[in-house]
Image (cartoon, rainbow, N blue to C red):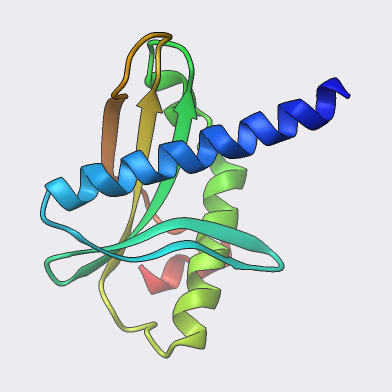
Length: 135
């Protein structure tokens, strides 16, 4: 029973963080063009447009005060998975020639705090794996 509640809470916490991240990006003047874009092999949390660049945003969150902890969890295997998901998405829509980059938004929600502390890492990593040629 504990594990079922944990999955519910984790899903709720993640969705809450994605909504807060989208709100943060809109305040920057970006346009959100997709959220939770998924296929059987992966998911892209947010797609946003910053000027003439499509930004693939990975959202990470924690209930501790330090946003650096979730940001550090976007390691090489996660970067590779995100790169592959992005290439599949761009390929399906005929967008392989557009400018794009990967950003990481890490949100910290300490207890009692209504708004998160946001750590925005622009151009957080380059495409990895066999798709490096598309960068």
